[in-house]
Structures are given as structure tokens and as C-alpha cells.
Length: 253
Ligand SMILES: NC(=O)c1ccc[n+]([C@@H]2O[C@H](COP(=O)([O-])OP(=O)(O)OC[C@H]3O[C@@H](n4cnc5c(N)ncnc54)[C@H](OP(=O)(O)O)[C@@H]3O)[C@@H](O)[C@H]2O)c1
Image 1 (cartoon, rainbow, N blue to C red):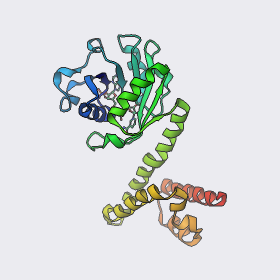
Image 2 (cartoon, rainbow, N blue to C red):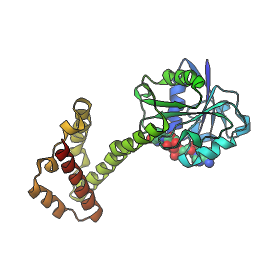
Image 3 (tube, rainbow, N blue to C red):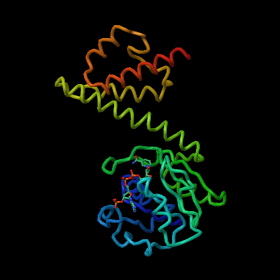
Image 4 (cartoon, helix red, strand yellow):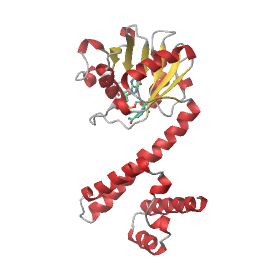
């Protein structure tokens, strides 16, 4: 069985631990966590270490720590010539220390510790420095997910920017919608079927086909009324720039 170790104990690491614990083709032999308690509800205590020198022999070491700590953590590993991968969408594979064989194991999903996910449906983007290592990385990927992609560092950068638009920015727009509702004593729940339908529609139609609203209708009267309603300058600017982007896109079609 392929032996995997996870270094990190945050949102992604905790979901990876649960996915590998379920897998029958890989063995999660150890987790490095600075504070052992953080992951003690997910894995046997004897498999948790907070000391790099105690890391056992594994086929793949998955570093899933904050982006700005990946380089430092990879250089602190006390071994050489092992396969070491990170899980970041935005960090280049070359950020990993050259004393080990490098790779990337990027799951394209938004993870929060307390929100369960079905790992099988999460796309895993793989990149590898030495082609000989692809088989083993693919094997561990396939053991937890049904969607495996080979994506190089420049492609991953594009994918990550795209993910910020479709996930992080969209979620912030939910926040603005929530704030506007709260100011008028309207429960955010009223908007949830609309949010759900918007996400479901784009599974069947292209984003262009799915677009509705005053911007695509070029409804100046409504747009002006909405801008007059908004008092927060940042929200006004977001409204204007997204309206402009929708209208410029229509001209290109
Ligand atoms: N969250 C997502 O939705 C998501 C999705 C895809 C990919 N990713 C990527 O996955 C990686 C982990 O993200 P995350 O959201 O799981 O982060 P997170 O929840 O913020 O957790 C960060 C982890 O890094 C550890 N850490 C930070 N600095 C460290 C250091 N100097 N030495 C050792 N450990 C250190 C933290 O340990 P302590 O708890 O001890 O501070 C914690 O375990 C990142 O590369 C991120 O870009 C995240």
C-alpha cells in the first residue's frame, strides 16, 4: 500500500486526513501538526507528531500549510530524495526545497474545517518534477478522488485566478447582499433559492447564456436607481464595474 504523510493541520489537511483514512489503497501513516490536539479527533494520537525529526518513511509527503510557509516547511524536512508535494493553487512547484523530488497536489474546492465535503467529486490537479513520480502521485490521487487532472504551474495560476472569481468574489457578493438585506430587516434566507438556482443553472448553460439582470438588458433606469440607493462607495464601485464588465461582454458576443 502507498504510504502517505500529511504535514499541516488546517482546513485542507483535515479534509485530506479524512479522505485518506477512508481510502483502502493508501495508508496515512503520520500527520505533522504543530499543536497535536488540532487533529487528535481525526487520527490515532500515536500517528501525530510535532517534530520533523520523528517523520517516518513514506512514499509521498503532502505539505498543506499556509502558502507563505510552504518553502520554509519544505526546507525544514530532515530527509532528501523523497517525493514532497504541496496543495496550493497559487504557489509554484519550484517553491519546494530542491533536496526532495517536487510535485503539486492541488484540490480545486473551498474547504472549511467544519463543513463536510465529498472528496470523490473534488478535482485534483497534479504536477510533477520527475515524470517517473507521476504514477505514484496519480495513484494516491485516484484513491481519494474520481477527478484527476494534469495541470502545470502556469495553468494552475490561471485556474487559481479563475477560482478566486467564481468562489471567493461570489461569496463576497453574498456578503454584500446579506448586508443590504439586514439593513432593511429582510432575512438572507429569502435569497437562498436564487443563489442555488444561479449555481445550478451554470451547470447546464454557459455563463453567457445564463446571464440575466439590468446590466445585460441595458436597463439604464434601474441601474441609476440602484446606484442612487447604494450609500457605500465601495459597493457602488463594485456595482458599476461589474455592470460595465457585463455590458462590454455583450458587445463582444
Ligand atoms: N482552504 C481552501 O479552501 C484551500 C483550497 C485549495 C488549496 N488550499 C491550499 O492548501 C494549503 C493549506 O490551506 P488551509 O486553508 O488548509 O490553511 P489553514 O487552514 O490556514 O491552515 C494552515 C496550516 O499551516 C500551518 N502552518 C502555518 N505556518 C506554518 C509553519 N511555519 N510551520 C508549520 N506549519 C505551519 C498551520 O499550523 P498551526 O495551526 O499550528 O498554525 C495550519 O496547520 C494552502 O497552500 C492553500 O493555498 C486551500
